[in-house]
Length: 241
Image (cartoon, rainbow, N blue to C red):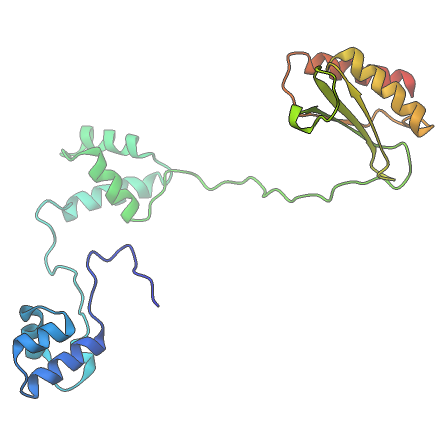
């Protein structure tokens, strides 16, 4: 089934409906019977019958474009002014063009009318971008241990906690991107002290230190100490390495 385009303001009848309706009417059937059978109006049936010459193509819709322009449309001289200004300055803005037309020419139309003509003529006030398109780079995954660690902090919801302690808990996770080995440890608060303590525990768990300060920190909670925690953590990792 063909979808109805949004540009059509009415639902046209198909060529087959028009053809068989006219054939049935020419065969001697009454106008009322043909209109009831094909759900059409008498005016449409008479119009199709007048245009029908025995071929289906004669019943196709012709152009709906008016033969004469709108009485309030831009005149040829106004279009020439717009073309001349755009030819002298291809990147002129619509506001600047409107100001020049008002001050230098006898132009008294609304800015919206100028905008519609400006776009209809295919003009653009924006200079073509010279910025190179970004090419996504392949994510660097190290092949040896201790090159890149990833630290993640999430809050453990109460519905996921099966213990009996009423406190809040934050789960710290450290992943070595080379081996994908992970170490998790819960804390009752998310602070710089907990973060530094967790890094010490992670170093003891993995059995080796970072060979560089390449530590990716993923914080899923927005707190005011995030920047301070990250700065202290990087400083600690540099000292530990």
